[in-house]
Length: 562
Image (cartoon, rainbow, N blue to C red; front, side, top):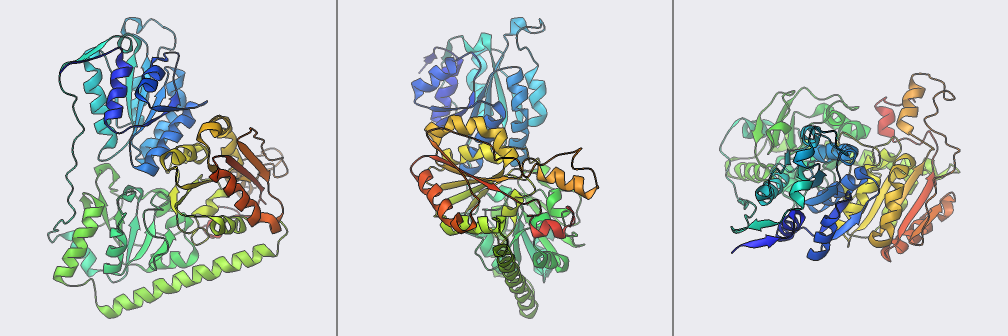
């Protein structure tokens, strides 16, 4: 049965609806036929003032939900402005479909208005980039884009609809193609091989969980595997939230963000099993010397398997690997003598107790100081939080406190990738809230990141509120200032931070903004802000922070001055 569409956007939106898309983020160009098509289909557009923030919102939505996100752009500078967000989506493995306008074919090479080879610009940043050259190709190209975005592995794709294609009627005479159906295998068998042999031989294993396990561990497959092999359980920064942080084997984020007792475990392990991670630099070179041991790597994406480490590499679903290896151990004998496993278990428990004692000591020290300290702020956020909840983070010097187990425990987590673009968490929180409206969403960010997203926070507060922004105010960029100090450069000539600067302003009837200075009122202020968010408002808590308020593990890694 044939179907006729008034224009290309109508055909594309129909495909989006058929595949479960209900929201679009973006800042379209002057071809507002897309908005007309979205309205006709009952899809919502979350309007943005900055194309980077639009991409961050879409990425946050995709990471939180595990579903496809859509971002609409104009042409030319709109695409280049969004490039940073495309890079972040690629590195985060976020399934995002970018729909962009393009100059008509007849104007290419003429120096026309906003003419740019946008496919060439975006190709290095996405899994697939394509310009639709004929109306007959609109539907097949859109289905291909959707297929490549959701993967595996997932990632952003770019689809350009030139002006002379988007305005033409689209006639579809064949049934709409559907997306591939995944073959679900929940009880795989694993034949003996180098990876299983290494796991069997290990006496002091570590399991490292990467961001690819997001939405793949709802029933605790990873925790059961760690229990079966007696492993200390760590995550990468992007893998946080994929496992139960209250589990007795969990020891926090590995590498740069790991506490000293956790680093001691790494130094003495005899095997690392990396599940759906990429072994990024902050994990393998940040603060903890990587042990000279075999690393079993599992990743569905061959590009995610590092060639820098000795040990078996497995191409496949890490969930299936954990299930299969656990079953093989059950069927063919355990992973090491009971006595050795018990000693390792005792060391893991001892490290966890030491980390708890260190956190309590840090809070006790903070209580003696007059100003609000970040450890106290995180404690107040945990004390007032309800479930379900998710913390959306940045990667600046002082907001990295939220990476430090056990200062922040439990709940979901959305963090920037190893690219760490400024403002990601501030804008992504809007997409996260849109994906999980029943979740308590808190953005834990610096004032530089807040300023980068402030316009979009104000614009979206009215219709898409409910996010609590906790803004650490040091008047600039703490990480750069720490490196300036490490090199002995003059702070007056290179003022990366201004600690005495007033917190940035934001206003609006749907925004409640408070500056927190009274330590005694901290918990009550946070609780009041959460109540405002629960009613659909956006709350912003500005917290001036001292320059020396830095996560202990960062000081221990000697990446900042002591």
